Length: 331
Image (cartoon, rainbow, N blue to C red; front, side, top):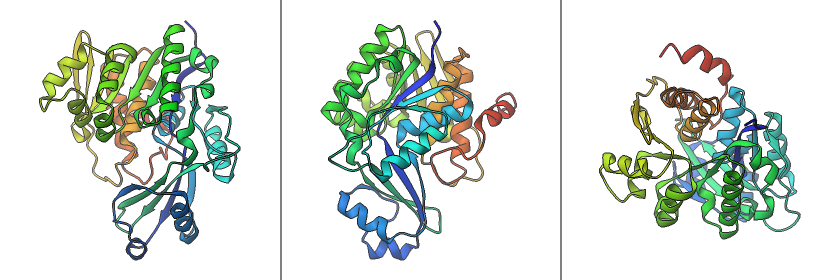
């Protein structure tokens, strides 16, 4: 069955603002170094006004994955909510510049576009203050039926399972995807997210999701065990495919008939682990949508994840298509 898009991503549309700061800046504003915290709009604006020159780009977990896919040559689309404001236009321009179809209608009123202030200290430590704003206002009406029906895989981020309206949007997308004979996929996002929604995520794994992405800790929490083998056996009964990341150790790819362990890629110049999981999903889905062996898909995921952690930011800063072509059969 032909498809217009390899992957459609649905997630929190956030503008990442990357800026270099001195440690004194964090101390002066009572921000714990290395922390990730949610802030209100007023705090976000005040901090933004005091920061120096910055790099502003489209962000959010699923958007990062979609950007990675586009860099590898996949055909991609994205759904995420912004407001019709300056940051909303930054997000819009940036994601479209990558060749990604993005048509979600902007809010005309209410909360402003989400942004994440990523403050990088001289020692490369990242401190993040996130204002969620408009991104949590995703509605069922924002789900484009034609985009879902035209995508080989619809990929969603677990972070957006918190707001009820966004949850309804996800349910609509899953229903439409399966109605069109397409695949559904979700990233569990983080262990706190799993803790908040364990029973619903278990139901999704068993009945709604074809391809599950989780790190080891998230999977253990989902199945309420400290034994990874027990968690693997459980997810094997639920999803068509589960891709479990294990940081430097690589990944484990689980399907009904196989459990494949893929070694990680040695990284000597680790700079910043943010975005590693997002890029792993990009590499894996790039291979999956091309019908490649699941073990090869795991290797592709490991490769692009190991590249993104060698520099600041959650996006590739090289041509991943060329990188994959050169590296895949050498490792």
